[in-house]
Amino acid sequence: MALCFQLHHSFLPVSFKFQNPKSHKLARNIITASSSSSSSSITSKEAQLAKNDLLDLISNEERGIKTQGNLSKQSKIIKAIEAMEVLGKNSITTESSSLSATWRMLWTTEKEQLFIIKNAYLFGTQTGDVLQVIDVEKRILNNVITFPPSGVFFVRSSIEIASPQRVNFRFTSAVLRGENWEFPLPPFGQGWFESVYLDYEIRVAKDIRGDYLVVNRAPYKWKE
Image (cartoon, rainbow, N blue to C red; front, side):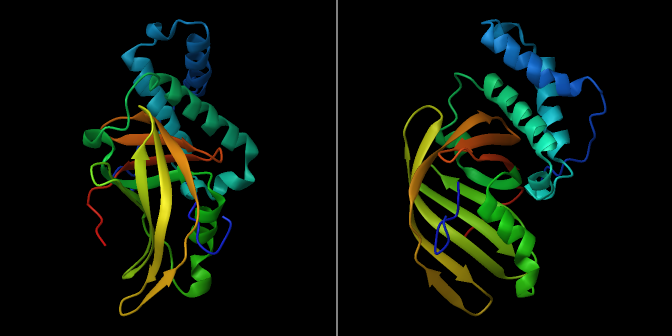
């Protein structure tokens, strides 16, 4: 989901390395099983290995910055995401009990967010956690980029559940905030995202522009 304003538009730091050289074939096998109507044959062990495979692939990609210049690696990650989508097929990922949370970015293809992460140093700062804060009951989504120790840029959105996996959103306001100052920015835009896989640790999403996002549940709750 792009952060739209004037521009056009880790609790689970992945500490393990899944070293099985056959692991990157799992995505292809799971996708093949789905297309051949035999997805029920996918075992829980294979599902966990597929998740580990995705986390391993993105673990050293600096949230997607390195991936931008490596199309081969990006292709492998997207294949792994497609495998997770197969695993999440027919699941409901928009219920408040599962979707409402402070989600921390692990990896994305969104150029706007990656631009900010990469170039924050030009403004004498560095990027901290990048978050999606979702409250389904209140119909609120905040996209948040932190700049420690006290800076933050966030875009407020209203949301609407459109289907078992799709959420529609509309940007309502944006704020760039420092320790003793605040600067409002006029946001614009609307769209949707689909959480194609969600469990107690991670969520995998794709959006209206074809971008991908992998997040985990942050060990804290972000509040304005």
